[in-house]
Image 1 (tube, rainbow, N blue to C red):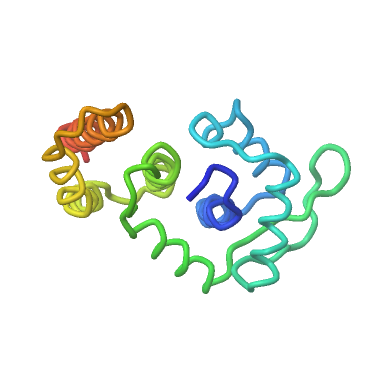
Image 2 (image 1 turned 120 degrees about the horizontal axis):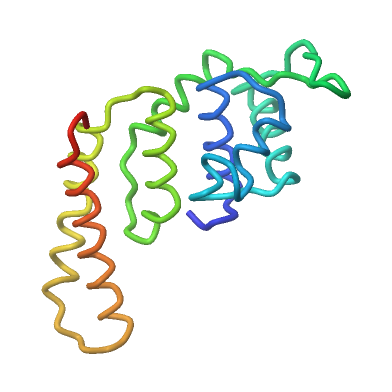
Length: 170
């Protein structure tokens, strides 16, 4: 998924709401470049609110009663039961493309930590998805710039996943 992909935006916002019901401003802060998730993948205010609207339209989230936010009242966004089920399924689905490690996989791992989900089995499944892709890229002897980049990136992904798996408590 591309950096500004509206589907990824929806999934990330939904997972944050599953972790904790919050108002749009709190979601936007979390997704700003200085925020927790925003350090890895950020989303503009406009796209954050667009994702909230899409989630509400699809009955994956709902806006609740206003909560005093110190200024104007803030509408709290809460995941529906359907939204929780959808989000957990997305968080359990390994990423299919190496190019999405920097965005989707990193964010999924961060969100899994926020939700207190185990990562060991997820990392194992992710390694199994990438293994044939990585082996194919490493077997390619094309000396071109793009092929070299893909091989180096594949090796970095393999090391990254192994490093996470080797950490205690994962």
